[in-house]
Image 1 (spheres, rainbow, N blue to C red):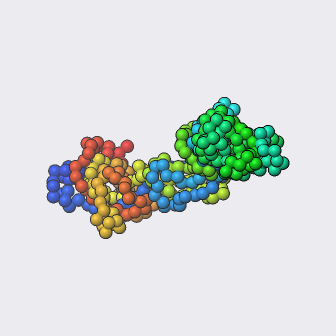
Image 2: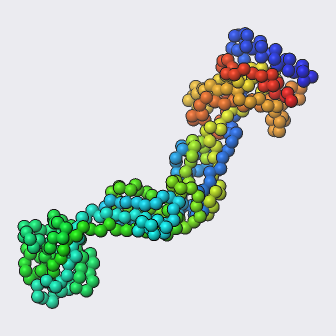
Length: 375
């Protein structure tokens, strides 16, 4: 019986290849878009999910952020140019121990003045300096060089002024006044101009992400880097997010907002486009039209008003089993034909498709491929 079936299929295939009309009248079967290799999307670190940005059924592209994790964010306290050290996956404490900080911000304010009240006009009120008060500056060497500043720190008779306006030179001496007319009675001290020091930023835990690039200009309140208090794996990646590595469709989400995820643990299930196939149940009388390697036409009735079609190649033929076997006629054998589409664009898991012969085979078909039940 097995030998007779082989001869029957071989004869049917020969007739199909030699006769053009036979191709035109080849069988059309209904199939379903399936995924032959579902994948698990895993978290890179152990932590807590902050936001879930996708749901089951959503199509995503490689690089899309699926979830964000709760992190400790370190923000810039002033505007300036940021300089970063370390990589994601590094210990923030280790980076700071080696370089002095994870991030330095070179402030937009270029100069500061280190001043004292020793040269203030002799009045009690001039020896009492207030943090954040606006002051006026004038060079001792060139009285035409003036500027404005803000008191940023006070310690006894010493205080620091951040220069907000005016052009001065490093190590230049200036008088500090409370009045814009530089009246002697408003002089509250004297100081020396210096370049503003970069501000250091450190953190604890593992560096999870750098929202900005080293050398970028940041504004006050911008996040400089993020850390997680967790075990980790992988360097050079954004550990603060769970990201799609391929194009495809989310089949299920395993962790919601506030849920704990573990390093390497499942965060979502995923159907990659690369593993999309069309499967159809084909009777033995029509099997000669669908040998392995045969080119077929795939039409999706419910897309583009029924005009969506793509070519494909028969990838596999196997004897039907399980639930498919229940659909088979008791007097006829049935087979599962798997088709690899040339393009998976817009195809979604579960869609119905109509498959028909489209042209010649891509590769020669072996006897074993012609006989799906051969041992």
